[in-house]
Amino acid sequence: MISAGFLQFALYRRSVYYRDMTISTIKPRRGRPPKAAAKSHDARAELIRSGLEHLTEIGFTASGLDKILKKVGVPKGSFYFYFSSKEAFGHAVLNSYANYFAKKLDSCLLDTAYSPLQRICNFVEDAKQGIAKHQFKRGCLVGNLGQEVDVLPESFRPVLVAIFESWQARIANCLHEAQLVGELSADADCAGIAEFFWVGWEGAVSRSRLERSTRPLDRYLELFTQGLPK
Amino acid sequence: MISAGFLQFALYRRSVYYRDMTISTIKPRRGRPPKAAAKSHDARAELIRSGLEHLTEIGFTASGLDKILKKVGVPKGSFYFYFSSKEAFGHAVLNSYANYFAKKLDSCLLDTAYSPLQRICNFVEDAKQGIAKHQFKRGCLVGNLGQEVDVLPESFRPVLVAIFESWQARIANCLHEAQLVGELSADADCAGIAEFFWVGWEGAVSRSRLERSTRPLDRYLELFTQGLPK
DNA sequence: CTAAAAGTAGACGGTCGGTCTATTTTGGAG
DNA sequence: CTCCAAAATAGACCGACCGTCTACTTTTAG
Image (cartoon, rainbow over all chains, first blue to last red; front, top):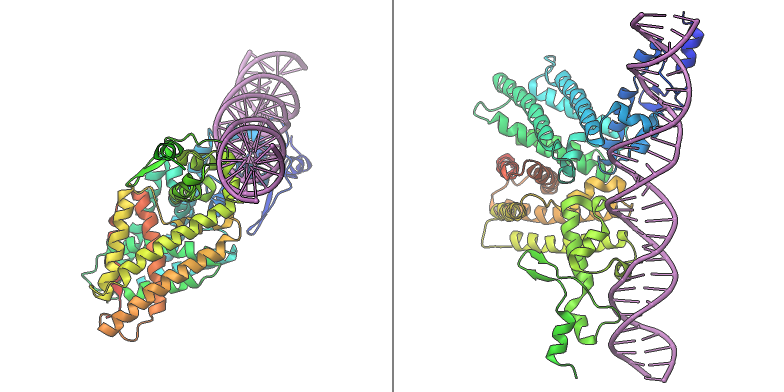
C-alpha cells in the first residue's frame, strides 16, 4: 500500500514546469524508483526538453551534457542509462522538435477558418512571437543543426533534409489550396515556392536572432507574400 | 650582405600556397628571424588565411587554435605574439573576410557592362561557384558567426550587423540603378528588398551546404528575381 | 658586447564527452 | 519472507582538446 504522503516524497524534489519557465529543485533519489512515480516522472522526457532548450540556443557541439543534465537534476551517471550516446540523444531531441513543429504547422496550415495564404501568415506570426518570447535566444533547431552539419555526425544530415522536405510539402499543399481559391497564379510552381519559403525563413530567423528584433521576420513575410505570382 | 642562398634557407620550410590548396611543410626556426625574411613571410597573414578556412567551414567555437596553427606551421606559442586572444583573432579574420567580400561585391555590382539586375545575378553566380568549388564545406563567414552569435563574445554582434548593413547598402544602390533603367518598379523599397535579399541569401547558402547542392541557391535566385516588382 | 626585440617551445589548468564500476532501492519469484 | 534481478544514481576516470602563459632562443641595433 502506498500512501499519498509517500508518493509526494518520491516526487518532491523533481523539477517542475510553470508555463515556459523551468524550475529545477534537482536532487533525485538513488535506487530503483517506486512504481507509482515512474509514469509521472520520466527523466527521459525531461532530458529531451532540457536538450531542446540548449540545442536551440547554442547548438549541438557547444551544448555540454553536464549543463543539460544539471538543469533537470539528472546526474551524469544516469545519462547513458537513458541514451546510448550524445548522438542518439541529439536524434531524440531533433525528433521531438520535428514532431512539435509539424503539429504547429498543421494547426496553422490546415485551419480552414482562414484563406490559405492567410494561414501561412498566421504561422509566421505565431512562430515570430515564440522567438520574441525567448528574447531571440532560441532559433530553429533544424536550421541550427543544419549550419553545424559539417561538424556533426553524418547521421544527422539526411534527417535534417527529410524534415525540411516534410515542412516543404506542408507549405506546398497550402499553396496549392491557394491556387484553387485564386490567391495564387494557377501556373505557379508550388513546390519551388515552398522551398524558397523555408530557405528564406531560416535566413530570417537567423537574422532576427542576430539583431534581436522581429524586423527581419516581418520584412521577410511582407516581401515573400508580395513576390508571390498573382 | 645576405646571399640568395641564405634567403632561401630562411624560407624553405614555410608553408606555400598553390592556387587554393594549402601545402604546409611547417617547422619554423626559433629565435628572431633574419630581417630579409620578415617581409616575405608574415605569419600573421597566414594565420588569418588559415583561420578563414576553419571559421567558414566549422565556425568560431568549433575551430581549434591547434589546427589553425598546424596548417601554417606556426607553433602554438607564437599565436599570442600575433594576436592578443582568440577573440581578437576572430575579429581580424572577420575583418579580412568582410574586405574580401566587399571587393567581390563591388566588382560585380559596379560593373556597368551589365544591367543592374544582371549584376546581382552575376554576383550570385560567382559566389555559387565559389561554394561549389569548396564542395559545400565553406559557408559565409558572416552568416556562420551570425548563427553562433549567442555563444560568441558580445563584441562580434555589432560588427556582424554592420557588415550586413554595408552589403545591404550595396545591393540597395544597385536596385536603385535598376529603377533608373526601368528594370524595377520606381516605387519599390530598395532598402527593404536589399535586406530581404541578404536574409534569403544566407538561408540559401546554409541550405546548399546541408544538401551539398547548388539547387537551393539556383532556386533562390530564380524566385527572388521573379518576385521583384516590375 | 650587450640588451632589447622577435619569435618559439611547450607546460599548465580547465572543461568536456564518453565510459565504467560501485552502490542503492524496489519489484517479483519462489 | 528471502533473495536476486531490475532500475537507476554516484561519481571517478581517461583522453582529447582549448586558451593562456612563462621561459627560452636567436637576431638586430647601438
